[in-house]
Length: 158
Image (cartoon, rainbow, N blue to C red; front, top):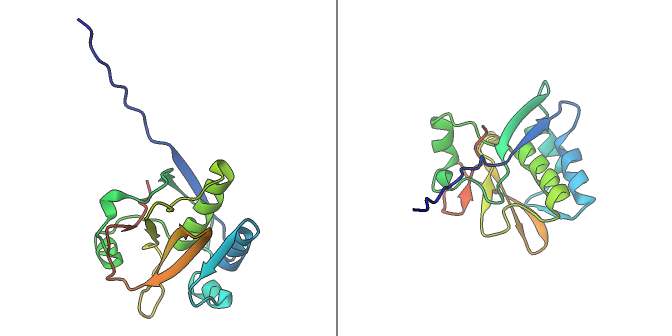
């Protein structure tokens, strides 16, 4: 009798390094050297102030998935923060885009999903970035901390 074996493969992961010597505007401009980046209400100086680099080098791991986490669909930033889930922030999402593009020559979040960057709410209203690929552009829009949708998902840090 033949038995069928199923082998469980560990999903690929990626380490994202966030450096204290790199401004948010520099991360954005490095992506603009490769493709079009559109940011709603763009003011790079304001982004450097609102989303500053960390005080020290940080390294976190994420699953190397094209789409963000299905398990975090229909969860708002407020719900994610209340549950104290470690999720990707805006600067990490920019670096994730760069690394993904260098490896695969494609883009994450282009199949009707958007990464909710719940790890970096911007005061005073705690709006967060949602990042996705559409119409041959990397798009960054802002949503309120209560926004939730099936295709608006955070990426969990490991």
